[in-house]
Image (cartoon, rainbow, N blue to C red; front, side, top):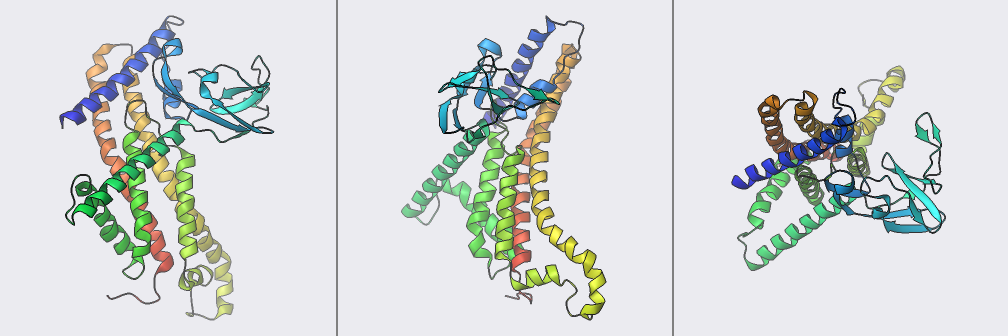
Length: 359
């Protein structure tokens, strides 16, 4: 418990320190203007080509990540060329590139961007870079691999779990019995258990990593949640049985003659088909919105100290931030459970038998 308290205190200290540095830099330029926390908050939740840890300007500390571009050939270089604040122009093989709103554009040596309604019109090469979000995904995958091999090693020694396996076994059993079995059914649930266990642990680990100081907001990235939703879309519809597709195209069945159903089906069938897209879309938005909202609320509560320009509100600001942070620890597991449970529910609706399974 003391470790959790230390971690939470460190988290709040790092962001208070970062806010203080930003506030100090802007106060000298405009003392009469109120502090605007929006740029700092958006910078915190956005993806980036380098992993910023702390500090501002020349005092910033971060990790340079590999930039991989396809621009009439492969271009691979370090994000260090853009600088820690990504304000520099990078020269690679005689071409110049600059980052604008986390997207790389081809420019001239001066870094000029041709703007049209606040959007650059410069050529944007295909970007396959290892960004901050991608790096954290790789880190989460490595953590899960270590946990998996360590658990497998434990079972080789004894049927009784030991070490990390004691923690993982109840999670696997819970996903198998309470999520897969209950929502998919006893006939076909086993083939989907590995995917559902991986999905649950992957989202949970990324949610926890996202709460650490300086970490990436991976599950709050709409592209990441979209990919997970597409996986669900593919698995559900590729697993769909005849009854699933018959329900889509003939939802009323043999209850009435087909001639009498035509007018109803003009509206009903498109709505049923639209449900194929809306179900995974709801998964995508739910995870993205909940995890992003938590980060924004915590940062906004801390920013109150600098917006109101008084330390009298510090106990209230940090107290509420601490409460939301503890709540986010619970939400990290809850969102992993909801995403996995709804995925299993959608799979179950696609593979259900024509008659209920009584076994």
